[in-house]
Length: 169
Ligand code: MG
Image (cartoon, rainbow, N blue to C red; front, side, top):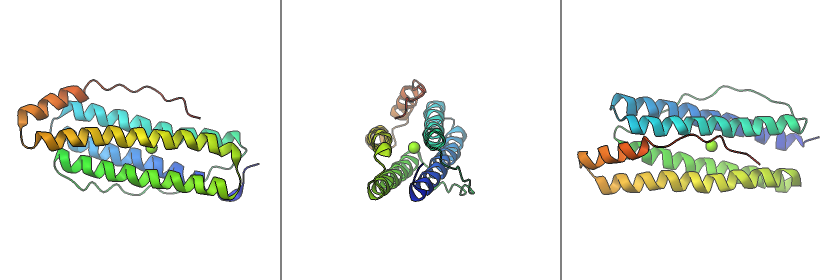
């Protein structure tokens, strides 16, 4: 049986991952308004990844005999207007998620939940990838500046991203 504190931490994180999907849906709509279809596709893959992250913990909690608790998902606040500003928000959100996953590992260590270590190590590695991916697009956007042609070339690149359901754990 899973420790109650660990169970609570997973439930909180499931909410955060679903919030991430919700925030990214809102940002995807912003890109749709700008008619940047490659960015729309990139965000769509991101939304699916966040849902998969939530489901990974959802299924894990069930497999450990834990209880799922559902709470309200916050209203997403989109803070930027330009692709650059939006990607700055995405990066800072991912850095926040990384800090939450690290906090989850702290709980696992505190309650000596060794089974959670390997699952959470997957999430820790995933966050390194997330920050690298988002940081890569952000760096390109900084290079692009206000060059519209270069922005459309990046949009074309981002159209190629496909969702590969992750094998979690
Ligand atoms: Mg996530």
